Length: 301
Image (cartoon, rainbow, N blue to C red; front, side, top):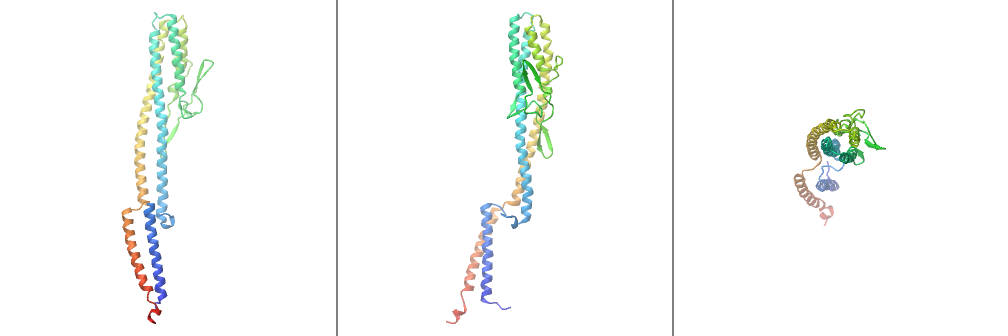
């Protein structure tokens, strides 16, 4: 085949253009830190990147869910701790009031304190996290305990509030309110607030004896036991949540590493390849100058 000067020049320009493209590729990789900037550059890397990034986004969402779960569990535990302290104080007052040497005015003073503690327990039962009531099951927009004309009404919503903390794994983050505040108030010992109201009424009744008041000790002890049992269950759930969070944190590290291996460039290698390509490019320009320089006119002088 006959090789002409134009063929040499065109071929040289084509190779120099390719060299520029290589230089541009390496410089883009260095500036972005990524192997590709368009899916067309490597469809396989692009497709894998979509899958890996979806997995990472999912793991990061689970991490945000853990924050919500901790918010519920820790606020519930703190509220139950305050409720336990209030009941312990009520127990102390019952022990004092069951002494028949106490006068009517002294028992009435104790009754007033118990009424205040009852209102404090109502406030605890209506604890909110953000704009959600945490002791009313899934009905988080309505207060579980309300005082209407001196009468305390309670909700009995026992449905669990569940948060997805891993793929397909939902953990309940609230406590069963019927085990804490909302019992059947039809008889003594079954309803916390009805018991407290009955206790206050009996303290105000001068016909009641210390034995009548002492009867409430067993009821309050049962309520305290219920609270401690719920807190123990909540603590066990917290331990599980912490173990799951450790697992998710490990998955996040792995997901980021896999994504990095797929998309991120090896900087040392790219810098080396760039320097080599610069040398090749300069050599190509030098050789091209030699090819283009001699023309037919040069030989006719």
